[in-house]
Structure formats: structure tokens, C-alpha cells
Length: 364
Length: 228
Image (cartoon, rainbow over all chains, first blue to last red):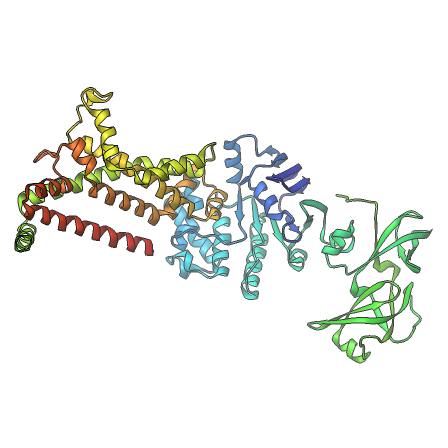
């Protein structure tokens, strides 16, 4: 049985549908990450999971209990969870008092409370700030207090809404370190939202991709990033090459896709005549100045239309009958003397292509 | 002009020597106004919290009515309390008319709209995220409200101070329901009114200076609270 589950969950704010038919299952000890663009409904879902808001329709189950059945049950369940909101909100009181309030509200007082607060302050390395007003802390420090304040209550589920949003890289790294420690030391089940996909990849056991209030795909990291089930997910996880086509031949799962007169070979079990998207990660594309013999099933000649340098890498966009982007190192771009208008050969393997059916709709 | 100057000097003497009549009147004023402010805050802070935190139909209308009552004339409140507490009135059996209790009741009615309005405004000034934070940390409704009141404490104290200021400086209601009885219901404002009409300015000026000092202290306190 899942520790936390939603069934046909809907949330409407006034006329706007914020969440549509959300069905997720979070297992005990799992790190479940919600990814999606801004406004996708991640915060709304976390607020529903923490029972801060009530769903318009559908059910939320915590350990098999329907959490919305009564106010008393909602409070009892909420006390088994903790929620770190996106903007670290600290009360206008000392760091110590901030840390202690969750315990006080649960009836813990005296020596036990002091000991637990001291331990939590040590965990976030903020012992020397104990008596300081929490409002005077920096954003990163306040977020560490917020996380420790949540963890001090020993929640079975820790909900976090983009805990590293708007933080500088050093603070982000400290918060990520803290989250990793929580995962390893406390084995707490975590449900966290982020729009930082690399963070999602680093931390997640399972990922749900939310787009426009819908969970387009739920799966493990590999499934989400390498086998997106829809064009929307493919776009969101950074697959730059999404090529429209129709399957024109099918032989032992090796299919040929007609992409506007150019033919792409890929591994897929889609049927003949089916309209598909061929999804190719830019790092799968190899550029050469001449046609070479290789095991790659797909080789195209094209002209460079744009080169965009990002850090150590360059995104090279080629027109080879369809637009194709390759990710190569700046050094390779230099050695090949790549520039706009230059003719190159692009190759990629049939196994490096993920084919998504256009009519498939979304799968969970 | 000389008469006024003489009155002023005499007033200073009354204050410095702590003239028994002056001390008694000033003390009674502070006691009655502090009591009414305290009672009004007991009513208004929970009621203001309820109005702020709970949604009900007509909430906006209620807030508009409260704001309208900010400037209700003191004589209207005095008239209302008089009608209620006079021997023939519905609460006549309490025998409060022309007693400090009637004055306190009148002042509570007078300052309640201000305290209510300012409490609601103080709570509205607290970011909703803090309420969510409290609830997410396991606070029940009461604990969350207490935490938000604590966050708004300086603004809520300002509401109390503003209420006290209005109570101690009003004259209409105190005169109508207190009766300005010497040694019993005579307070600063009613004494100033009476002594001035008699042409005896010393005590009136002394009490006027005292009232101004109280207003100044209230203002300083309010500024310091609002600066936090």
C-alpha cells in the first residue's frame, strides 16, 4: 500500500482548473519529485497533499486513510507530515522559538524540546544563531531553519516546494546537502517540487511531470528522461529534436519514419502508418565534415544554421530537410571550424531515438 | 491675558504639588479608560480574528459598518447607553446609570469599532504564508490564530492604544451617562468642561495639560510600536 496516494484529484480556483485527474502513489521511503514549468500545478498539489487546501474533487489517502473525511483527521494526518514552503517563512521571533513551535503545538515542552531544538540546530549548522531573530537571517539560512523546523517534528512525509528556488549556488548546494542527509539519515519519505531538472535527476526515485495541471507521466528517472511518453514531456525534459513523421516500414521493431521526405530509422513497436514523433537528444547526434562509415543507421547532410555556445558546449542547429540540433564540445566545434552556412554530416543511431506516438495521448 | 497666565501658573502648581482633587480626577480618568480599553480588547481581538479568518456571507458589509462606526459621535453613544441604562430602560435594573460602570460601558461601545477595525487591519497585514506555515507545522486553528496574532502584536497593541486615546479624550458620553458627579464620576474631560463654564480656569488648564501629556505619551508609544 502506498504511504501517500491521490485518486482522480481535481482542484479548481474560481474558473481556473489548477489540477486535473491527478493519480499518484508515493511509497514509504521514496523521494518523489514533481517537475514541471511554472504554473503547472506543483504548489497546488503539494498544498492539497498537506491538506492546507481541500480538493474540488477526488481523494487523498495517507497510509490508507482518506485525509479529507473530517477536520480532526486532517489535523492528525497533517501532524504526521511537514511542509517546507517555497518562500522560507519564519516567524518574527528567535531562531530557537521558530524551531520549537512545531513541537510546542504537539505538546512537547521542557528539556525534551530544548534537546531536540539543539540537535536540529546542529544538523543545519545554525547553533550560533539560536537567539537571533529569524527575520534577520539570509534566504539560505532561513530555508535551512525552515527545513530543520519541519524535520524536528519527525514527519513521516516531508513535502518541499522548490526549496532551492531563488537561492544562490552556495546556498542551493547547502540545501541539497541537507536534503541528502535527511534522505540517508532519517529515511523520510519526501515529495518535492522543482523546476530544476538536474536536481530532479540527482535526488529522485520517482518523478511526476506536471504540465498545465495534468500529470503527463509518472515514472523513474530513466523513463522520464529517456522514454518520455508524450511530446510535451519530451520538450520539457530537454529533448531538443522532436521530429514529426509517419512510420512507412516496420521490420522486427526497426521502423523507418518518413520525416517530410527524409527517412529516419529507429527502434519502435509502433504500427505501420502511425503518426509519430522521433525524439533525439542533441548529445546523441555526431557531426562530421565528410561522410563516414559507421554503425549509425541515420546519416544526413545539412547546413549549419546557428551555433549557440553555452559554457563548455555548443548547440549546433542544422537544416538537413528537418531541423536537427547537436550538442558538441566547444573544442570539437573549434577543431571542425564549424560556422554558420558550413556543410556537415550528422549521424545518430537508431537505438538513440525514442519514438512517441502522436495519437497515444498520455499514459500514466 | 493676565488671568490666563495666572491660571497657567496655578495649574503647574497643582500638578507639581499633586493636588488631591487633580490627582483623583486624573486617576479616575485613566482607570475608567484603561478598564474600558481592556474590556473592549477582550471583545474585539477575538471578534476581529473571527471576522478576518472566517469567510461568511456579508463579511464585506460588516467590515464597512465597522469602519463607518469609527467616527460615530460620542453623544450618540451616550444617548444610546443612557436609554439602555436609565431606570425605564431595558437594562435599568442594573442601576448603572451615573456610575463609572455606565461610563465604562459607553466607552467600550465607543472604542470597539476602532479596535475591531484596527485588529482586522493588523491581521490582514500578516502574510498568509505565515498562517500556512503554522498550519503545516501542525498548528490547529486556534494555535495558528494565536501565532498570527503574535505576528501582528505591534499593530494589535496600536489598536489598544488608539482605543485608549479615544476613550480618555471623549466628553459627550462620559457627561451623559456618568453625570459628572464630584468624587464619583468626574473625569478630566467633564471637569475641564465644567470648570471652564464656571470661569475657573486653573484646574481646567491643569487637567488640559495632563490630557495633552497623556496624548503625547500615547503618541510616542504608538510611534515606537509602529517602528518595530
